[in-house]
Amino acid sequence: MTTTTQPLATSVDYFESIYADAQGDASRIPWEDGHASDALINWLNTVAPSLVRCGARVAVVGCGLGDDARALIHRGYEVTAFDCSDTAVHWAQSLDPTNAGLYVRANLFDLPPRWHHRFDLVVEVNNLQSLTTDLRQEAATALANLLTPHGRLLVICRAAETPAEFVDGPPWPLTESELLEATALAGLVPDSPLSSFCDNDDPAVLQLRAVFRRV
Ligand SMILES: C[S@@+](CC[C@H](N)C(=O)[O-])C[C@H]1O[C@@H](n2cnc3c(N)ncnc32)[C@H](O)[C@@H]1O
Image 1 (cartoon, rainbow, N blue to C red):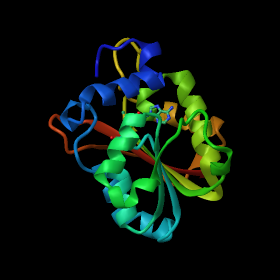
Image 2 (cartoon, protein in one colour):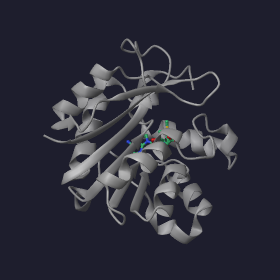
Image 3 (spheres, rainbow, N blue to C red):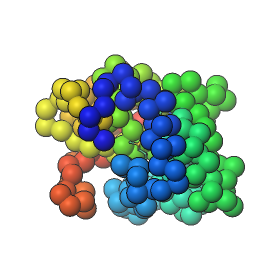
Image 4 (cartoon, helix red, strand yellow):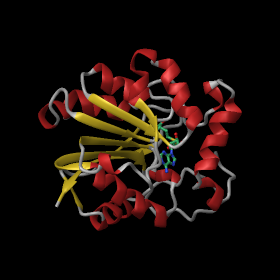
């Protein structure tokens, strides 16, 4: 995923075409690795138990084929997993037929009003890095609107030392400042210090993990 122009990369059609062109072969989805995010699993094992009760309402944003959503469902959370791509949603449903109703098509930038302030936890993994700066701000506001007054937003994304130039890509990794600025403008503050670490890929990729709550 390296040579796309910016306007196309930020459109719903762009993601739908990637899933549709893969024709059911997950190895053709650049970001799909067949398992939930290691950073998410680590957070669920260590931090989540003291922060999010079992059975809490959780939204999984840009769920793709549903790897992260399935991990959350198996832990007893009440999950709503959404993606703007019809093909991705049908694919995720086929991978988890028992819970097919939990995967729905929705656009982060045009969410159903009934979802506003509904979720105790919003899980955002590797989606902000697919958006240009202007859309990141809009996305952060949409993510904040999903949260209950005491809800938490978990963000996991690629990290950068300096802001992306948006020449090639996505992904466009975020600096800590960019993430903090976008979330602050959405009325969110970090719940704990941001964590920066290398993932288990080869070569390793620098990542950020952060939890936010309302001011
Ligand atoms: C880079 S992929 C990451 C997928 C998944 N979160 C993961 O970590 O494997 C970005 C995902 O966000 C979805 N997406 C992009 N724009 C969206 C939007 N406006 N609303 C909902 N989903 C969106 C795409 O279809 C795609 O599945």
